[in-house]
Image 1: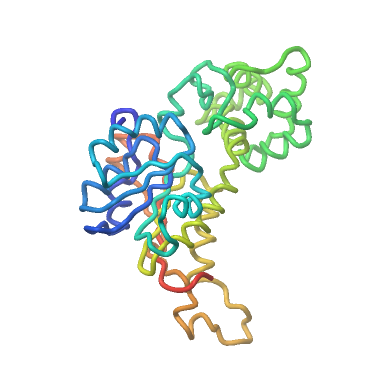
Image 2: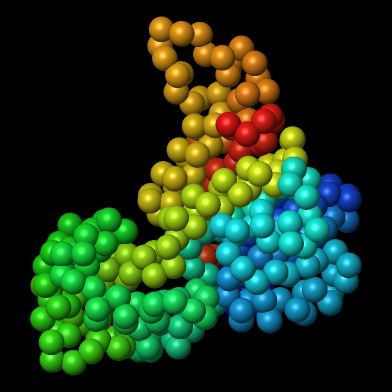
Length: 317
């Protein structure tokens, strides 16, 4: 498992969560177990790992055996981590730290049959779990206007209408079922100039479809709220994001619940500052932590990562 995926900013995440003997931590995006392994190695603590991908849960059983009695794995979405923990006899307000590593894992990207990447020809799937509509369903069944909107919103693709028009035109001849098919359609739609850019022209469209298929931003919002419910006072939340859409959500959540949040009114005293218990959170990182040159050299996929950390200090906002 460790050879298949290199955890990003793992030392920084572990340092942020302050692992200690007897404490309980939740790795909400277990994946290949990189953060979990590091936490278990840093202290005689317990970890609950959550992942919506059943293949990750199956592969993680080796780690469960290695750390018998200290690691439990649960299949499910991290947006439901509070209800998943409650179903496994973990009360709200008792968790000492939560780690979230957003986006798609290297194991998923590098698996052609999962359909996340245009680097490999495979079925156009992109589902992190084993259920729900696939990316092929979206590109073949969504009307042109809605398709353009989601490519613009989640992929930040300025030429989204041109891409959507090309997809709709192509699917009239045959269903788009393969990653290579879709990538070629997008590249042709954006033309030779886009092909000379630093990133592949299909990158933004693939990102948009993946985020849409897995409801990643909705899942993130639910996960942050769930983490707030399960963390004990003094417990910390560490979130690693990989693009601006994710980072914006994390930043807004933490700042909105911490002392840097906006005043209810500029004409009234800020009751939250007058009563620190009402703040709910403290910003541990006022600016995001980013990987250094050495880590990026070892793992190029880390180059866009940002880590933000908050500490639970009072009642829920």
